[in-house]
Length: 194
Image (cartoon, rainbow, N blue to C red; front, side, top):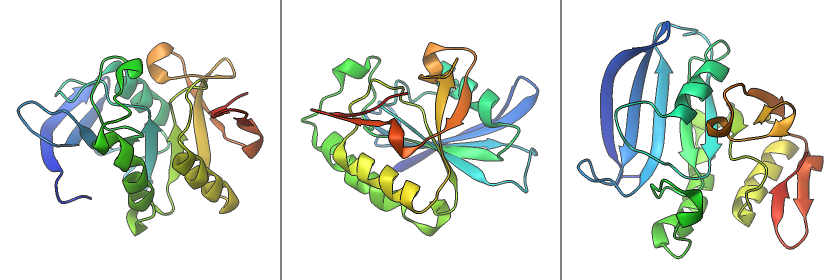
């Protein structure tokens, strides 16, 4: 964890039949511009099971209430994991992914930081769930990391709906399917395809 991240803990609360503990790591408590990491713990559930790592595009919110994406990730993961660590490729909080400032230093540098973070011992053996859908142009450093994980036989999954890669916020019924290296499409940019 970076020393400049501020930990913001929320009390445990019920979600459906589960109790969830949620911790955010932000740049500022009062008016955060960046959300660097989120931890979701399924309290009293599957304590013997590992966490998962979830990686999305950008955080839309940094507030106490669970957003649609987290609710759907919880439904997807709660039976097989004891919780998850959520990171985004870009930490900037925006309501619209097309509004991400790709010239912002924090956004530019976070991909390298994320790569270093995910090589730490705590994350080393965890399954990864990518949930940014199939249309995202993936930064080269993220592609390198994913390819390294595939070479290392790490379990990587994508969120999908009816067999199509999709963001959990876009569809209520999602499942996870295992990522294969053949799903990368390379032309002028690198994306994930079915």
